[in-house]
Length: 138
Image (cartoon, helix red, strand yellow):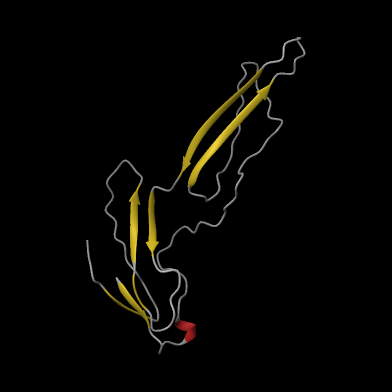
C-alpha cells in the first residue's frame, strides 16, 4: 500500500480513530501480581488468580516458599515458570515513525495467527486525508 498525506485536506479530517479496531490494548504494567504472604494448604499447594495486563510478552512466575519452622525443621523451595501472553490473531502495522504533509510511504502489516486453526482473514486500510494505491496484493 502506498500513501501520500494530502496537503489539501482540512486538519480536522486528518487521522482519527482506526476503523474496525474491536479491542484496544491499554493496560501495560510490569508486575501484574505480587503477594509476599500467600499461604499453602495442607498439601503444600497454593492457588491464586491474576488477570494479566495487555502486555504481549513472556511472563516469568517466580515462586519462593519457606515453612514456619514451628516443628523444628525449616524447609525452603523455589519454582520458576514462564507463561506466554499473546492474542489469537495479531496485526502489526509496519509504518514509518513519522510522516509529514507531502510524504510518500509504503505501508504494510504482519499478520500472525496463533490459533490451532487456519483463519480466513481480510486486512484492509481505511483512511481520511490520505491518497492510497495498492502496489502488492497477496
